[in-house]
Image (cartoon, rainbow, N blue to C red):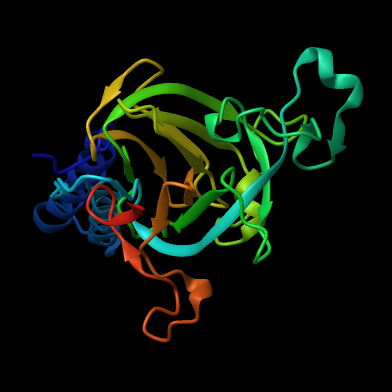
Length: 279
């Protein structure tokens, strides 16, 4: 059972103790013209904010076969069928690489096996009628500052790759608002999960305008249970999940679907909500 995520105890308990101290000083010693109790109330409010931010509730994890659960809490921004149009180049391919001011260097061909996700690839939406077995589905989940920020494994399997990326020539950033589609090239951590049957699922933790710290709790080679905690993003942002389109279909409502009941997209919970079902 968990109440606060890792690293949350001190940010919560410190302002709580300070706030209690200021209120006790104001009550029994001297209110200092109301400054002491005001500071006490402010610090207690700050502690409550941090407690809400670092909360880490237990979740019921579905046991169904052939499903992929959400790695994050938040609203579904979009669910898109995509195809790869490029990949990060090797040293030998730099001469033929394409340069982009924001997103960096790309080789104009995707991986030989697109669904291996062996390196970061560049994707575009697939026009209707041009679908292929090499396509992927991508679901993007927007995490607001009020959502739970702990991320969970979408499948049971092993982490085969985990890499940190920033914008071209940047040590950190960029930090565009996470609700914008362009934020996919913000500072990010790409994690690849592999199931026992060889299925690969790519999860991208993306920083936002406020959330500038992605904290992995796991590393390459770790074996994860479905719904197990593997990291968090501090202060809200976005998490994208890519899966093979020839094996899965989305089963959530996105903001782009135009459903009046879900103007912001369906709200999903990490570890509990099913994002994809096997065909």
